[in-house]
Length: 139
Image 1 (cartoon, helix red, strand yellow):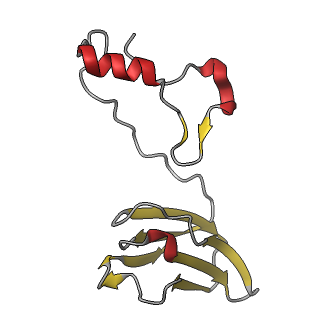
Image 2: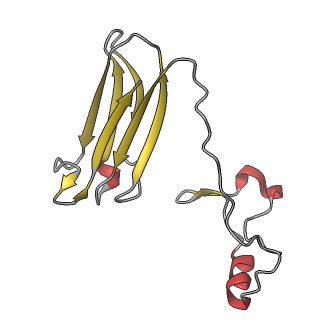
Image 3: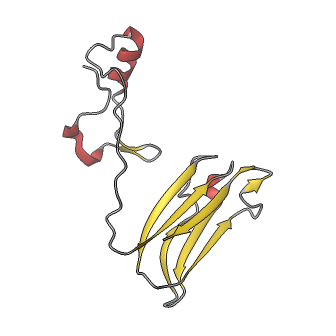
């Protein structure tokens, strides 16, 4: 067998808080690595086509590149007209350092929005502790 992923029969009960669903069967994974017999495995990893955002409204694209302390970063997107929060990422949502996260959000057209990004420690996301950045695109 080529796969080291746990069989589907385990359903949603197979979850790890650090890696999420798709927990690996350690015995199969070690056997594959130890014996190096990858016959029956695909010769290359499958490629996934981007999933189009199914949205009949406007789209806000938020690109966050984290610094060395990603769990300190949070942001909030607010509809200024109604003063309601449209989307957010809370402290701890980002876990990978120096990684670009991209979020697409469907929003009603013809509205104005504000974006607020915070760093829990207060040292920002750039320069001294990594090269973090953010970019907001709104069609």
